[in-house]
Image (tube, rainbow, N blue to C red; front, side, top):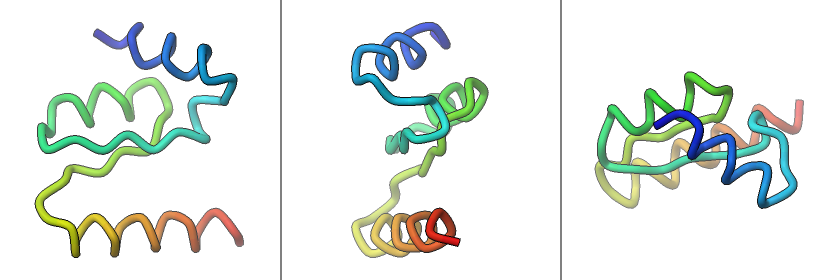
Length: 61
């Protein structure tokens, strides 16, 4: 449910575009991106690390 992602960000005191959602289920990641979060579909640690590094590097620019 999309509202759950919005509530989580609100409770954390962050904007949706500041959130990174990680899950191994693509549907949950799609829901997170539909509300404005960044999302990574987890397949393995190396892939997660690479995608997080890319996301953090892009956010510094």
